[in-house]
Amino acid sequence: MYKIAAFVCCMCLWCLPLVQAQPQPVQQTALELSKAKEEKQQKVYLQVIPANEAAAQVLGQYRYPGIVADSGEAMQEVRKLVYSLQQDAFLLASADSLYWGKDTLHVKLHVGQPFVWAQLRNGNLSEGVLIESGFREKFYHGVPFRPAEYVKLQQRILRYAERNGYPFATVWLDSIRIEGNKLEAELMVDKAFVVTYDSVQIVGKTKTQPRFLMRYLQLLPGQRYNQDQIDASRRMLSTLPYIRATRPPQVHFTRDKARVYYFLEDRQANQIDGVLGFLPDPNRQEKLLITGEANLHIRNISGTGKQLGLQWRRVGKGSVMLNGEYLHPNLLGTPFELGATFHLLKQDSSFIAVQPRLQLGYHTFRYGKFSVFTEWRNARMLSEVSVQRLQQLDLADAQTTTYGLNYQWNNLDDFYFPKRGRLVELQMAAGSKKLLRNPGLEKSFYDTLDLKSTQLSLGLRLENYLRLGKRGVLLSRLRGEALLSEQLFLNDMYRLGGLASLRGFDEYFFFASSYGVGTLEYRLFTAADSYVLLFYDQGYYRSDLERTRQGDYPLGLGGGISFSTGAGVFQLVYSLGKSEQQPLSFKYAKIHFGITSKF
Image: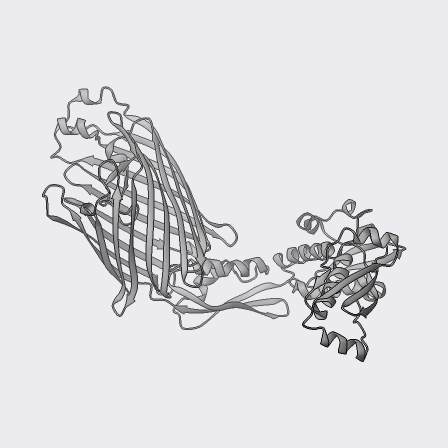
């Protein structure tokens, strides 16, 4: 909208003097045209002759080539020079005469005086427009008049109007007065009429309901039209794994109502998959330990955006993990979404930890997603643990309750196979931890422990996808977490290692109170959903236990392949890892493969 309005306003400003100031087409005789044609393949010299001494001083500040390839390029350079002068406030600059002399184009250039603002007054701009546009009368007094700067001011005002329900606003200069080289005018805006949203319409083969999409994108009937909101809705749609936009959205205006059309189609997003891993068995040489993973994700239930997920993983001998999640968008008809997660980890015969979480999220069309959550963690030692082993492993029964904030911003171009864009996620939580007395232990075990303490946790995730050529993509990623507490135990620690965090090691190989993993991964796409990859993972971790403190810089490297089949997406990853506990050797190589079936 604003581009048309800006053009009309500029014409009102320039009026007769400025129209005359535009560079005029060069009238060439038949002889000159013949000469230019003959010299088309020869070098042409360009000589600019200032009309007077003042013009010579001004032209000394500009650079232009003295030798060009042909006559056409010489004419183009003259036009560029005149345009640059006009943009720098010399509005009457023009090429007065041009003539050829053998292989040289002679140009007599008129520069004139630079135009300045005598005064630009506020005509009818409201306080909100003044703040958003940055317009102040004092900024336009005795300063050069540059057309490009004035156009930018117009665009800022029009963008503000578009964000506040006035997409048909126009901006112009009124009461224009020119004396010599000084310009005086009033800045005016006509908002026309306010426009509100009428409805959201979906075009395409999808079960997604318009009511859900309207609330998710916050395009509510009766709400004022906002162009930024329409632009940002494309990014918000790209974060949904179960639909794909086939065309940019379109807005149809009917007088003071705006109807937004989205062109969508369903993606196969419901997921059933499994992964098998073959690892060396540390207890039996020359034997393999089989690990595995199974996932079930049901997305966009009944077209309402609801999601349900379950995950089971066998991460080692006697160690299993179970995750569950449920997402309910548009809670009670509001833009808020309610999420619930459940995490269970059984570490061989040492301990078991259960960790449920409730989260309330809110999507903003400009700044991403903000969430608040509360989390409970209950860690218990298993009955098989002896007192001696308990002291050696630094375990304890504990209950932890934390409250936190989470922020996520995502502009990846695709949910499953991103090729450009970035993802940012930050998290912070604080709470209290309470130690529980184990009846199987002597009371003296707790004499040196604080039964109540505070706990703080921090999390970071950064991802960036960069296109390299037509088929290459470079993924750079940084992930890290830190757990800060007056006293930590082994069953409080983060777990690091495996296909989802630090490749080249067993699943959950490292115990860490804080860690960071940087990743560089090159993907060469052979199809839209198939690629080969090479990766390098560099990690750092430390474990701040009371009895044992340690840290290391483990690394992992390798390659793999991912491609689509009739049954789903098949993935194979081969990786090597190196740390203080594991040498870089093919003997300890890890092979993970699996298939993801979507329906």
